[in-house]
Image (cartoon, rainbow, N blue to C red):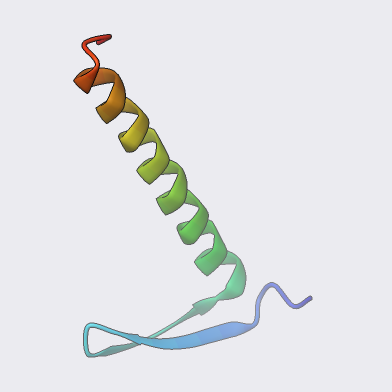
Length: 49
């Protein structure tokens, strides 16, 4: 698999292009931060923090 293959997409009316590895890294970090925020929210809501 070519991790440096440029991926082109349109977001917000702008054309973007980035390597596949960078795009996957951004998606992974986004999911991790979303899960961490959800966990912290539930902990805060339960009064454990």
